[in-house]
Amino acid sequence: MYLVEAIMRGILLLLGAVLLSLTLALSQTPSSKAIPAFDQQLIDQQKQLLQATQSKNSTAVERAIADDFQGIETNGDFYDKEDVVDTAQKGMPKDTRAYDFRVVKLTDGSAVVAYNLIVPGERPRYRHMADTWAKIDGHWKLKFRQITPNLWSATDLD
Image (cartoon, rainbow, N blue to C red; front, side, top):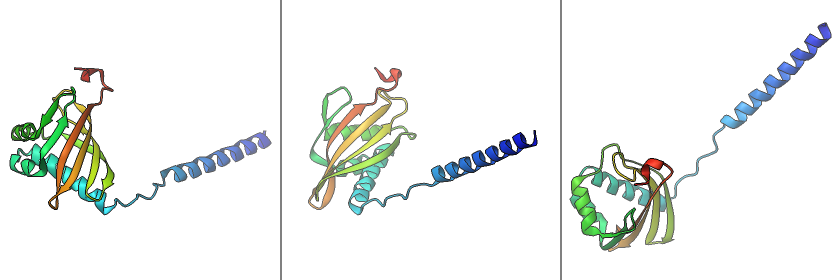
């Protein structure tokens, strides 16, 4: 009986040590990579445009968009700069959330900023965004936008 208890205690101690080691190994966060300056500049530009739209600052939105801007709406329709400025005058819900920004550099003067957007109260609520920025006369301008609905939710099929 004593031998069985000793073996069980040994197994429990060994299991505890293994679990502790696993917990420590999994809790270590991988070193976060620094965001390159080029990427950060475009992410900041994107966030400023979103903030200007949210706060109904149509003047800032107009300045941030190229005159020949084109976009593709969630339903596949094209729209232009005037439509974006009109939308900015109405604003976006304050609890709109943009996240998971990724930058794809095309040239030193152009890049795509892809991100996810949640717009409460609108259909589709969940969107994948792809904004193409170009440096024009020394300033970053939004040239093209593709909005793709994220239809993972059956309620967003409208």
